[in-house]
Image (cartoon, rainbow, N blue to C red; front, side, top):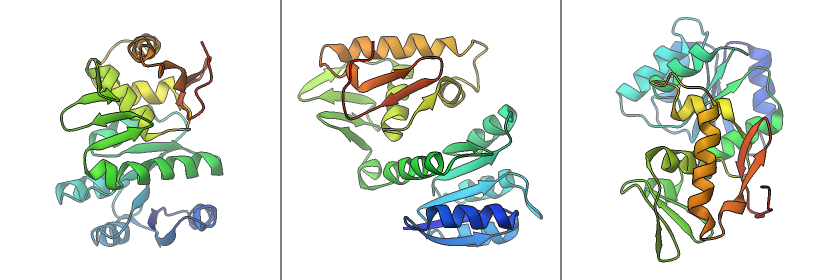
Length: 228
């Protein structure tokens, strides 16, 4: 698999390259114009894109790629409290974001999730978890032969969890991704929807696969521990 790192801090870029060398054949670009040129080749499985870059910033690079219908998954690197950065990144087509500084394991998990999302099952508009199948085109979820009734935001939440299986998603990340653009409500809405999603999955005994990390967030896990 091929990874493109667009980051003007050479030390950080080299560090990311070292972190990911077991998974990816990596190319590096150190300014926005060079990064855009490489990304336009449309040969990468995933792109790590910094926001503050010489010549073109990360938003401009990503906007240009999406305008050219290049759908390579992109993780944007943001400042610690840069909520505006996250929102703007999602609006121009980012798939995920990672807050600096970050841990190696978190980076690898997010890269794995994006690659999985852009793989064969995703391209066929179907996500699969055990006997659960989510059809992204028809917005339906089935377990076995039975339909699971989910409203729009519950569907979006389950999709986000499926795409980040075995990866903790904080309530803030979920809120930013699903509600953040148009909602004036608080992150407590995430707890409400997570609870309702569990209720709808309980009939199939799939509620136990959504693990709660109290005060932090949620994770879809393979082991099905009862976590309340």
